[in-house]
Length: 295
Ligand SMILES: [Zn+2]
Image (cartoon, rainbow, N blue to C red; front, side, top):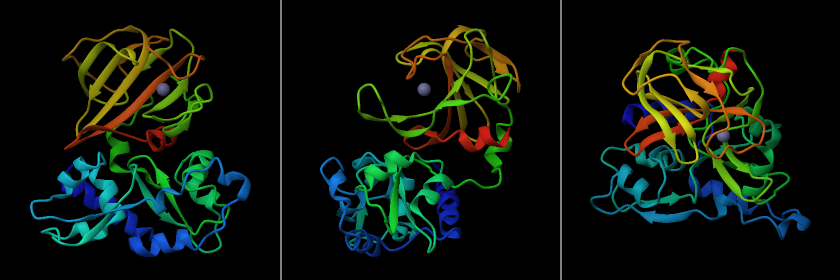
């Protein structure tokens, strides 16, 4: 991820007023006791009461600290605006969350449910991760690169298409999801779009085929690299109609919907991902704002 992109993310966050000092955040969470007593047994301690301090040492960089804790730099920047300073302030203490995500204050007069909806997050997952508080002052939203719904961004213009011939329903959304079978919370890196087996799968923009073949979990997979550091993935395909290195245009057929690999649900669907290039590799972002823009 380029520093410029981090800056844009961060400025966007500031513009909607979600950044406060880490200490104030912890205080607000702790002042918000008691939790719902029934939920207390099954609910973990709120993520924001589990922030670990890290004192910036000589030689530390934003990227090296992020790597050390297996987080993306945007998570650390959002939690610690002090890291915007160049050079980063040696000796200062910053706070490290256990997962990627962002901190969002609940504006006065608004409910936490409204905030969760604005970020396209799963209310049940957010509720549990925040210790099942019924009236939190602020929330931790798990995931990477959450952004509130808003006008289409430049990225939406880079990927103007829809991956199926017609808009369809979302079976499983992006982000932390509770798997009803295993009961475990998993990170779903894309959208599951309902479609019958054999439906054509379309490229959402101009690009080049970066992968076309079998990959564990994904089954038959096509990966397209687009301009501006964006990548799209189309998984569980029945057939693949493109070859590695081939150029594709908007709307070109990449293959057909299938059930190969290990789909998360039994009903046939296209697993669709959008990823952006960063220092840590290709990182999945929420495709929902792109998909919504086409409805
Ligand atoms: Zn999926």
